[in-house]
Length: 391
Image (cartoon, rainbow, N blue to C red; front, top):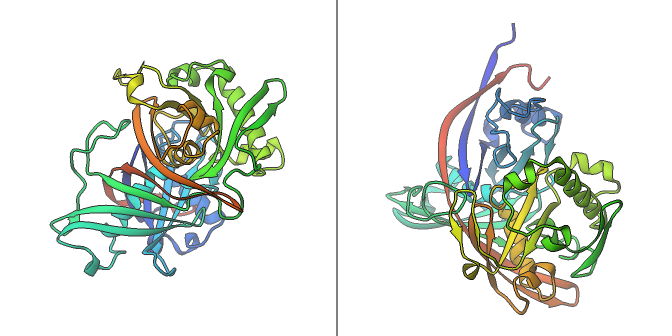
């Protein structure tokens, strides 16, 4: 009879997401390196693939925001403390998408590293802030998380409120250093706005950007939407979900991320698709009124085939970068002109993000994109899985 094995794990919220965190050294030896064994292990822990799309027999929450895993280890790279690897677990299909980062969970990596003893104790003050330098292994980028410390421990509780999260917590500033694609242009087609043609659907003005996470931005009006939609307006309509997935697939091909529409089925995490609109008043999913005078624009984003309940952290980086470049779809929705920060409205509330773009001979670059998030340990101990999971 197969027995269960247990693996040290920490269940954490980071920003508006939550996931299962592991120290690399605590994983079974078969899962120390990328490959089938690691993927099988993480899928079984989360409860995927689940044809019922509920993840009842695992730790996943049956949404793109809660079907996530993180592996952290001490970094051998100079000027970095830890390496951070993110795995987006498909809910109903048998694969883990390693193609991008999770900006929300990035806020939890620093606290996890401190809790797990991966940061030198000599660097942790009795009271103050620790700057944890994180190497994001999925996209080969640096993230700096400023983690508050009280009485020698991570401060988790506080009065910082983040729309999309019910309870307040301590603020963590997260900086994404040089968030644009290092291997190519921040705008992969070389254009700030492209004609994106999707057979049987239409042609749209789109900004295709690779910063934070590859993202396709389209004006909501061109799609026939208001821009203030909530989850139920989109996720309950198969027509819209199919339409958005088709647009995303053809956008991915235009960005050079995939060669055929079929490949999009195994690359659900990236690129993201978002639609924007000028500022207007609306009511959030928690019935909180948002005034159009308090935001620069509205943004709604698709994640893993569904409209996101708030905003993905990496997509927020993409919003900041696109808004900082005059003439993009995002910049125009915000009123145009030079911008170093924008406050945008999403289904759960508002978020302010900042970035400063500059144009060089090689194209547009952004030194750093910054936002505030929070993180908290929800549970720690051991997760159990059948011993034959990795066979």
